[in-house]
Image (cartoon, rainbow, N blue to C red):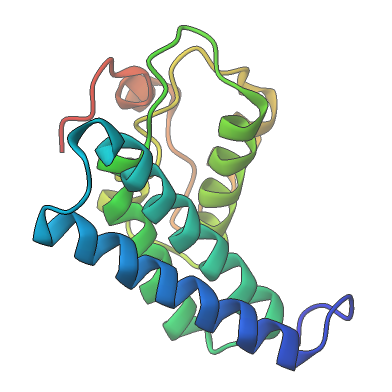
Length: 156
């Protein structure tokens, strides 16, 4: 365990519950039972639940390869699950962004997926995030290569 705030049973139940939720939401999208106006909210829920599950597995001490695979799933759900059409980012969005970026660095996510996890950073204060970018295990990302951080759309 990487934390002593909760016991392993708590994490097992939390992770199982989240996995059931993800399956439920994904099945609703695949079957067409999710109402059209609810699709963005459901996609957001899938993304955030995937990310929270990844965080829980990290805290519980699950094996790094398993956590890395879960983070890649969360990154894959990011394109449809991120919804920040505003010019300003909310506190919750900023926290989610810091989590996914920090885990991407910590788990040594490859550059391609790292860029996917970072494309939603429009108009974000860069003091903390630029420091994290410099911590990449394969070397810092040069400022001249940061143009992809400020894309207006999610073009993968």
